[in-house]
Amino acid sequence: MESVIDQAFAAALYTEGDAGLDTGASLLAAAPQADAELVRRGEEFVRRAWQRGWLPADVVRLVRRDLDEHAAGLAAGLIASEVRRYDELPPRWRSQLDELPAAPPANRPDRFSYASAFLALCRLLLALPAIEPVGPPPGAAREALTRPPAAGEPRMLTRIRALLAKAEATGYPEEAEALTTKAQELMARHSIDEALLAARTHGDRAPGACRIGVDAPYETAKAILLDAVASANRCQAVWNSDLGFATVIGFEADLEAVELLHTSLLVQGTAAMTRAEAGQRAGGRKRTKTFRQSFLMAYAQRLGSRLADGTARATAEAESDADGGAPGGTAPGGAALLPVLAARDLAVTEAAEQMFPRTTTTRVRGATDLDGWTHGTRAADRARMGGEARGIGR
Image 1 (tube, rainbow, N blue to C red):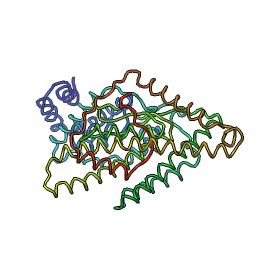
Image 2: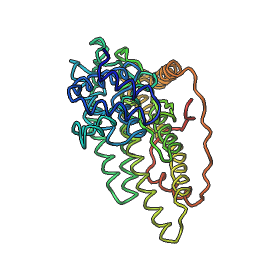
Image 3: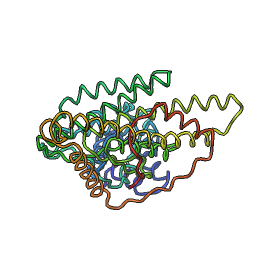
Image 4: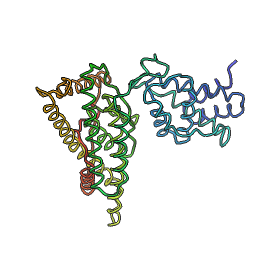
């Protein structure tokens, strides 16, 4: 005999529209004895998401976008309960789990509403497509789940985070510029040190990947900004506009730099845009949407060239140090800098092509607001960093 859970899921998950959800929710609301089984089924849907390449932050981000914050909390609760079954988790999972929203209490505000929201979440989880994995799923072999930390990494990242936090908090553009420039210099130098260390020790670390949300509104400009930051830090970014994220491919230290810098520049850019827009509106201007779009497009494009300059300077300085530190233009230990960096760039390109053998370029709509473009360019000048922007989706 078919259980209440099976009847509810058959009605809600395989019937389009709200009628199926209402039928399934009514069945579950009248069957409190099925509550534990309902959660177990929800955990199964979450487990399928891991098998399809999704990570906790990816799932919550999409649920929040396509449903609402309450559903995101329900998803977080299922994720938290599902991962308890694993002794170890892949890299990056712990920080993502720590940032999950709080799960709402069960059967609130009433059993029917809760069941309806839960079934809508399961319907969305069922429809998740397979995406490119950016790491092993939970439950993989132990050696696949462990990743030795880079030498000196925690101290360096702590220092970089502190600099970027100060840049975001200050109300003085010149101070923000100095702080963010210093942070980028530390990132670039740390990347070079990691590359030379790997070359000297014949380390076998391969490029990895991470996913970063690119949320509406103005997602095209945000994706271009992320691509500029990724390129500056010797990574490549591929944007999936349908699912609202970009996958960044690179070596681990560089991926962490991209995540830190992109978040900070987006915060700085949004704050600068808000200030500039307030000035425009005080003068009687009301074209808010076009101003913001043009501002962020200019901000992203200008940062691309600034980031490229910063990376070139850091590399030239490191090469000069290597020339002075050992005969023949090699760094101490015998690793020639430019060939080492070229080899890592090639490894990242090959990894990106293997991960995304078929990509398309995205046509970007031109900015139409001159004031927004001008203000965005100035804001980018104040927050300059380092790397040439490559085409999104390459």
